[in-house]
Length: 392
Image 1 (tube, rainbow, N blue to C red):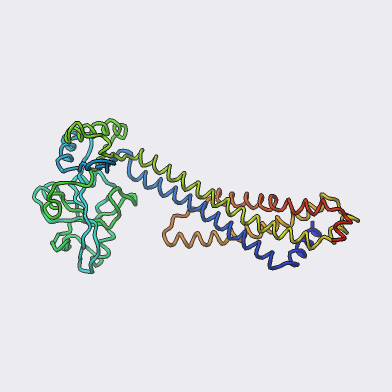
Image 2 (image 1 turned 90 degrees about the horizontal axis):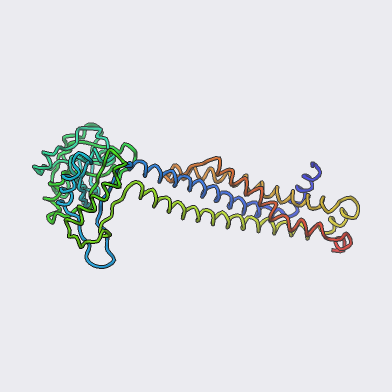
């Protein structure tokens, strides 16, 4: 074995540039494989976390965009009827939304303003960390009060107590009653930079036609979701005329979102597998190119070996060992580079999850790469006759 390794080292030094380029090609391919596999794991974990955070009892009702005809908008009256008929079974809040400048003592930024009712904290996965959420009385009396996300609070206010301070929303002054954060890091409605205000106040300022963007519904009993879904569709069709097709409305549930996310995961998985195949072929072509040149350069040596000491199996083993070492060097370097790049991407907020299976994939490819693409040059060297090889 030591003699074989010394021979491999000597042969690689004969063509250093080609050897380095082959190793570099495998390095790039394997680093890409590791990154893609790990990012696939990260995307999958992120999707699953977000779907689980939505909660099995959550439903979001929206008006669909029909292929033909005029879309049927949701109205506050729709949400009010749902609230009355689902009372005691589920919490309901209409959602209206707009984006306008929000200004605080420390500056101004574009804010996502949501009109909701006092049931919103029971429906969404939020936690009021300062102050309190506005009350049904605030909503009925159209008071200009707001509950803001922690991101917005940190950017527009100095550190300390934000509650009681004023917030300028579209040139209207609102009193900050509370600051919230997302308990599970995710929300159906959006991130921590939201501004939540009472629905009636929102309607008076920006929504005179009473249309709404969506209705959020939360039940404490997830087994009731299919039954509630049918009941909600019945309510909507009854209110908008029995001729209204069910396809004019969409009810998203955790099960539906999970199904859609699985489809996206499948598409991403196909992309990853395609990229792995491309990396495998590119790296293999590099190995085969170097090995074919090695066979061509060493025809005389091969002939001498075969004439005096070496069998065909020995020649095959020698060249396969050489291609395996090239593959091993490229793969080991690619694993190191891929890991470092992965941690760099992780610091920038990209989803990246290193697992044993990711490294197992790289090792499996390395083991097969040297054998598959080194086999043909090895057989070509072994099946030459001694006289043919020595004559060159």
